[in-house]
Length: 71
Image 1 (cartoon, one colour):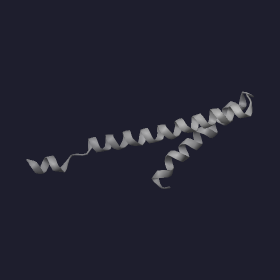
Image 2 (cartoon, helix red, strand yellow):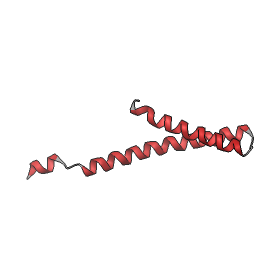
Image 3 (cartoon, one colour):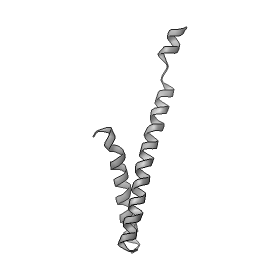
Image 4 (tube, helix red, strand yellow):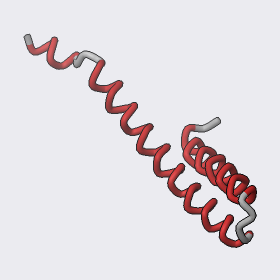
């Protein structure tokens, strides 16, 4: 799976889960779709945010070769 599709798939998964949960409570279908769309957007943004934090943490933990060469 290409890395650029990961946020879309996670957002879609979150949206589908929220749509199915809201349909259990017998609220109108259009409201379930609105809630699912908002949840999908949140899942997409959260996935991007977590990937950025993971990359920043990985970069922070790796030793810098430039600092070692300067000594």
